[in-house]
Amino acid sequence: MTKALMARLDRLLANLGYGSRRDVQALVSAGKVTLDGVAIKDAGLKIAVTADLPDHLKIRGVPVDPPAPLVLIMHKPLGVVCSHREDGERIYDLLPRRWQIRDPALSSVGRLDKDTSGLILITDDGDFLHRVISPKRHVPKVYRAVLDRPLTGTEDAIFASGTLMLEGEEKPLLPATLEVLGEREARLTITEGRYHQVRRMFAAVGNHVTGLHRERIGGLALPDDLAAGDHQILTAAQAEAVFDV
Image (tube, rainbow, N blue to C red; front, top):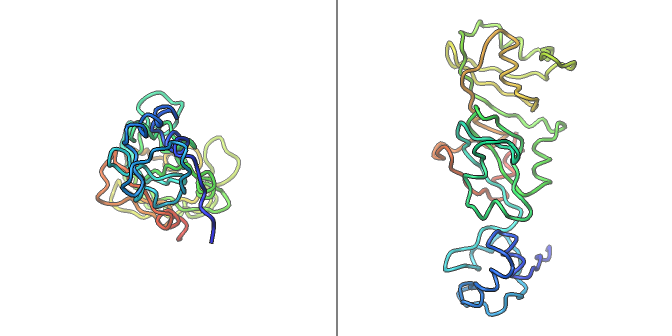
């Protein structure tokens, strides 16, 4: 059995975004931090950092946020960016403010552009992030696209051929699967993550994407009841479902 990591309470809560270590010490002095219902008196107390920490440790009666590693699934709305550096409203602005100063920091697993909605994963687990986006794993990503012009009926064969070249590139795309949903709507499954890949694929066959929504990454689908802008914390087992393909 793996021995639980131990951490000083003040350092742990500071890393979770609850303020500076001095702020945490003030909370402890005021009796606001409890462990299994008993007020903690020493901010330097060593705490076992386990996945069920929120069941035991509370601040002002509210369970603390889960410690790292943390994986979130978010329904990214239109008009929001995924980059920490890009201008405009960011996906991180949709999370609790204290989560923006967690250490380790939260990062998106890949990106969706400003005009694309749907499933985005956010994590502080670097190993998980790199396993998902690794080009060696070919984790499939499923998008629903609305198009400017009617489909011609030839797109599925072209996308599946493994020979389609995107403008400005020298390596053909891996085979992709197209499912026609309507005259101007399709579901596309890709196993790569090239820049604006879906939009550029349809551009390569003479069409233009007017709406794009990611429905799934690997074995993990966007929940039907997760509204745009909302997020859920995933258990370790739920997060690993990404690789169930």
